Length: 114
Image (tube, rainbow, N blue to C red; front, top):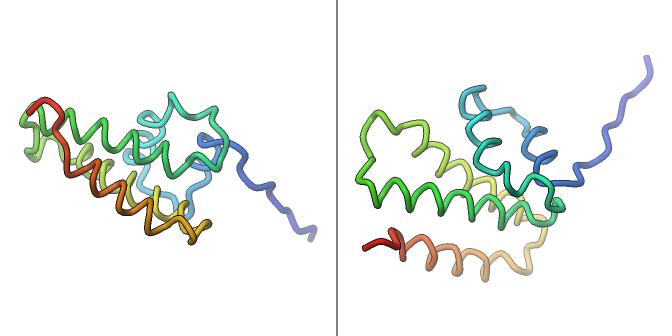
């Protein structure tokens, strides 16, 4: 049998589409929707695109007070986006500490409306 090799992802959208192991389908769809505006960006932008999308959604949830069971998928999406941001960022360990400090500061400042 021939071995099929897949070219590495070249965009944020391709990276999200190829997540392994794949998250549950509802979560995967939500994640792809949340990064859709960044899908065309180069794959090196995955960490920033995921953090931006996660921050935006968390900011909206906190500002609206929507942290109930009804928003569980969105809360899980925020957690997943931050996790995937650091999974992708691990490819450049020299910047990991700086990225983590910046992400913590940005998330700690949410919601922006308060």
